[in-house]
Length: 108
Image 1 (tube, rainbow, N blue to C red):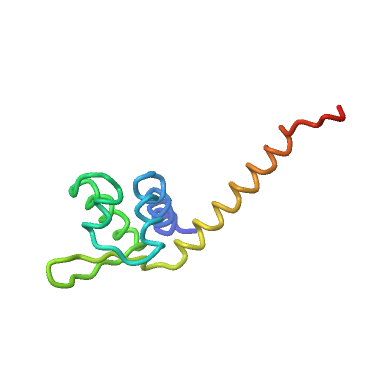
Image 2: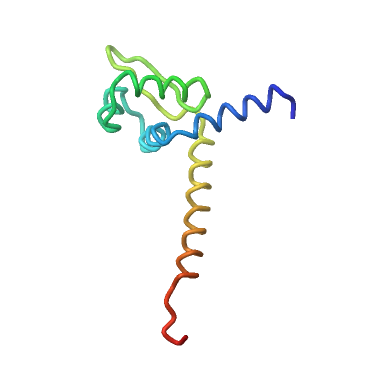
């Protein structure tokens, strides 16, 4: 890959590297939300949420639209859903394998 392509990939992964942004993406995967709804659900300040949303928007993961005085956010790239589902599935498999390895066997 070219240096430019690598930088674009890194930008996407950086956007996913912060728990608050993952929380916001998780909310948006459930459907479109206003910025105010996201602020309330995240339990953070408006400026903090807006900063995270701007980074996600710049990474191409979310889109925003104005309707009256409200700004609505939505998942703009369906690959975000797929990537999150893949990671969650993999983590679940790893946890299940660990649970099996730690399971008590009364026959031993």
